[in-house]
Length: 214
Image (cartoon, rainbow, N blue to C red):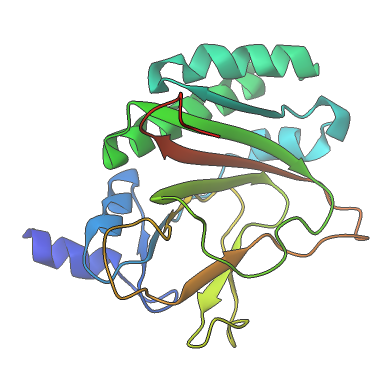
């Protein structure tokens, strides 16, 4: 398959400018002109998802750290241990997946360092539609409702809102992406306050110099 044909295949409509792929390699669509985001459409393993969904929220891993991609596996293992996340095969698979996404994202962004966040969310965090002040960001919701996105022509709330499936990574261009004009793609965390829902969200950003990173 020629590169232009692959690009057309993975840039199927989920919203204008959003590529939807069935393989991790499809996230490379983020580099194609006009692609504001790319989603790896995948389904999490049922047993691992059931394990994550039934964990005590107090035992979900949470952290904010800047590190080398090759340090993600050992670091996240330690984060899980510190949080009291039960040691088991499902936890190992979660850690393996986070490390694999970090490697993939670092390769796509040619990033020597990453800012990694594991957020446990029970409120309406980042409930306004926005674009992040980064080059690009990978978000994967392991538990709860996924990231919501849509196209806005005036900076306001999109008329049509899409929700990324749980377990499916989305790669989003930020305001520092070196391409203009802006696509108008905005995203937000879903409003869940008062619902009793708990989300576990992985966020990865590329970092050029950890000394300058906030």
